[in-house]
Image (cartoon, one colour):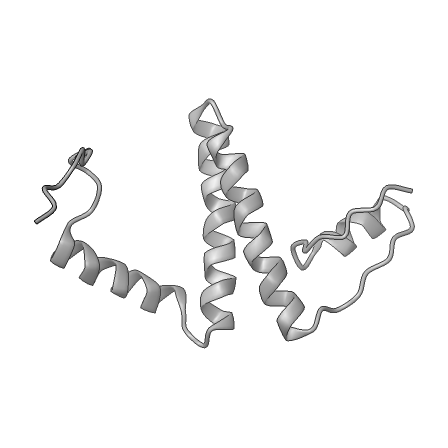
Length: 108
């Protein structure tokens, strides 16, 4: 029986159960949950980085967005509040649309 030891989406146990396979799960503590969300964020980002087509890229971006949503809720916020902060930062400092690559800045 393969061992996964990782955070999974809420309905994964149901999906596994529907296959007739046996499995085990447990509910994480708050500290474990945050640690696993952060670990999952890296996992999903790596999967996105390794994509080579639009369809897979969008799938992985959706997974990243789900993690960001869960993290924002963990911190007592919402995806809407995160989006508002993103907009404010973009207005103040810009986004990444212009593809600017900073080489160096003179040190005084």
